[in-house]
Amino acid sequence: MTDRSKGSTITVLRSNTIEVPALRVAIVGEGPEVSVPLGLEPVTIGSSDECQLVLSDRRVSRRHCSIALGDDGIVLRDLASKNGTFLGEIAVREAVLVPEVLFTVGMTQLAVRVSGAPSVLELHPTPQFGEALGGSLVMRALFARLAEAAQSDETILLLGESGTGKELLAQGIHDASPRRDGPFVVMDGGSISPNLIEAELFGNVRGAFTGAVDARVGLLQHADGGTLFLDEIGELPLDVQPKLLRALEARQFRAVGSNKWQPFNARIVAATHRDLRAAVRDGSFRSDLYYRIAVIEARVPPLRERKDDLELLVDRFLASQTPPLTRHDLPKTTMAMLRSHAFPGNVRELRNVLTRLALFPRLGLDALEPIRTRTSSPGAQDNDAEAWSQLFDLPLREAREHLVERFESSYLEAKLKDHAGNVGRTAQSAGVSRQMIYRLLERYGLRPGEV
Ligand SMILES: Nc1ncnc2c1ncn2[C@@H]1O[C@H](COP(=O)(O)OP(=O)(O)OP(=O)(O)O)[C@@H](O)[C@H]1O
Image (cartoon, rainbow, N blue to C red; front, side):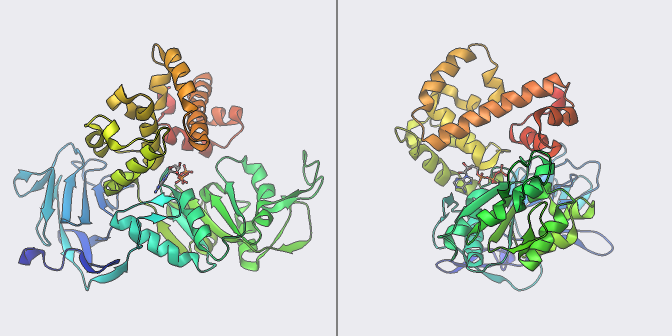
């Protein structure tokens, strides 16, 4: 470690405890400093709102470069930007930075700054929390936080892209909590028609609405003594939000069509892939409900920000094939290929890619293609027949997920075609919300206009 990098690297204090420097990525210029903190999660810099540091600079790409703090120190990476990332006159693809050294993107100069005393962070003792695997520092820190949070009854909000493992973590929280012997109940707010969500959550009395032939118990009650996982909480309709808030505050609820308040005893874990703070700002999510749910808020990082987890995940997914495989069974270039892929579908996508490679090892880079390209390619039927019989070798859960995903993507593609790419009409004809269609489009890498 050079003198100049002093105070800017992660130090291992003892096993499972690290010291993390207090760093900020700052725009260097006149006027008040604009900066964002740099912790275990990388900071992306670019012109897109999705970046942590957003630059309004015409010469900056949407996702231009990233800065990550890791075992090697502070690493600056260009994200295949159009105009490059520069250290002085030199364009860099990847460089280890020391504090106060200027780098340039577009017309903007930036630097990493030490901004105070380091903090001590506990890591989970193993690279696993429930069924979720993760050996990277950021995941072990997340696991440690969730393991601690599991002991309380507070509401937890998990934020992260689709396929990052939010449901697996919610199950892990339940299993690590004093409620582990009670039920773990899932409500997927994205896949239920908006006008049925309230009844799904709170139940309904007989005849409460057209079609309510019988009285039904809601999921809140089903989760009695256990945990209710509210997946895609961001899709909760505005009119149901105050009802959920009231229920959480008073610990009691009313079934649809009933006047009677009933107590409930379930712990709530919620998740969303949406930026809920932005939803609060644009008025589509109530701020009081947001603060009530986000008592403990945890971000689950996308797989591209924790490539250190790849080996562990690859080994696990290969071992679960029938017969179990190891990395040696795949072409030598496989790990390099996986390392350079961005995985927009995150761990779910990785698992599917490995299942495809296990079935058809010679697919190589084609295994990274979205499902639709292959299913509609010539000779797909022969492949389908072969894949179908080989699916029998997979564990039931994986075989089922694989088929559901293939079906969903083909269904979506066909429906979108029928409606000339119009999302509203596609949603209506499929009987789901527009948000659900957007979610599926994201999951399968489809664009409505291109179908
Ligand atoms: N850390 C992990 N370790 C092992 N498997 C994982 C991990 N993260 C995700 N997976 C696997 O990836 C798939 C998707 O995970 P999960 O459903 O928990 O993600 P999610 O964030 O809830 O996604 P969505 O928002 O689309 O519902 C599952 O099959 C899960 O087993």
